[in-house]
Amino acid sequence: MSAQAFGTDLIVAESKTPLPEGVHLPLYMDNHATTSMDPRVLEAMLPYFTGVYGNAASRNHAFGWEAEAAVEKAREQIAKLIGATAKEIIFTSGATESNNLAIKGVAQMYKERGNHIITQATEHKAVLDTCKRLEKEGFEVTYLQVQPDGLISLDDLKAAMTDKTILVSIMYANNEIGVIQPIAEIGKLCHEKNVIFHTDGVQAVGKVPVNVQAENIDLLSLTAHKIYGPKGVGALYVRRRNPRVQLTEQINGGGHERGMRSGTLNVPGIVGLGKACEIAGEEMEAESKRLTELRDYMKAKFENALDYVHVNGNMDHHLPGNLNMSFVYVEGESLLMGINDIAVSSGSACTSATLEPSYVLKALGLGDDVAHSSIRFGLGRFNTKAEVDYVADKLITTVIKLRELSPLYEMVKEGIDLSKIEWAAH
Image (cartoon, rainbow, N blue to C red; front, side):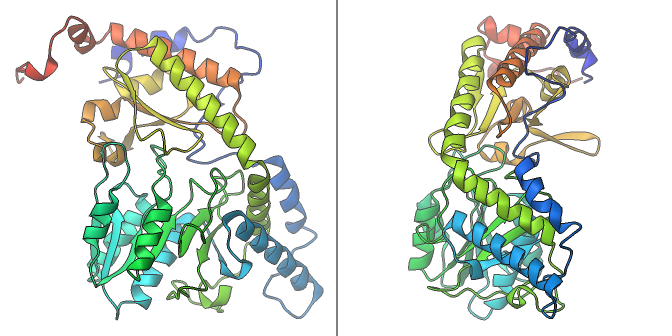
């Protein structure tokens, strides 16, 4: 159904009112998808595009030594943020490559020991599709279901483990619903069972405290563009002691990165990733507090102004800047059209000509109608309270107008139980 059928054209037309001070359109509130680069990160990177342009693998002249020194500094900055050592940091092109290297690298290195991998149904596609690829190669993969609040059951994980299990891959924090898994407990269980533990830490690193030693993490994927750094560069933490994790390389070449990832290093990008990690380490506590307050303020505005709204995901174990809410009896596509000057993420992913509800929201047990009405707000470093007020007010107005056009909402308000209605087929 078109947005115009819901009267969204009127909503868009009415948005031509003067903007509050400090609010500029289009407005970005999708910081789980990517973040804008922090100017301090760009400043650190700039010299490595022109003046310092050596190849970090050129060990026989000053240009290479200077580039290598910059790379090693970044390694230290990243390691410090996650409680690792510099030698445990392997540079990649981003989290997708890190996930592939971790999962395929373990599967191929330890296939003589076993062929069983455990992950969860709500992982990022970079993990799920990698596991599906391994299934075609003869590996067995268990996809744990999550509870309605998005958390896995540790009992389910324990029950899924066999003497053939070589790897558990459970993401630290979910990219859609912001739920933080019990990582330390998962890691402890894995170590007790002599199973390698990988976590996709993309959404967590730099947002919440992460310590690979305290949390028994053997492999951790991270990327720069989720923490106000450049796109196209990431890293993989690979534990060196207790246990020493070995990986089969996925890119063959000159044996760079301790033989785990060949290829000329992206020195400017790596410098940017290092600087982004340094800033995150210094400012995380204050930033986390501010974003949590903004998120809770936004949530309260929605709940005070609207009925039939609910939060998706456990709010006690949650990322500071994440808010995923369902606005029931509103069609998600129309809602997005009504706030088309605001960048947020819908619970629907557009695939070809059809709208499919998010598989993460479906895994929580939400029906298609509720999943389609969900919006993910990703608050970040550069969002302000004035922007939160603008977004919340705009969305509340849009939901109210769309519900005025919704026969389902009208029926529910009249006390009719929609589940008992027999709909006539056309």
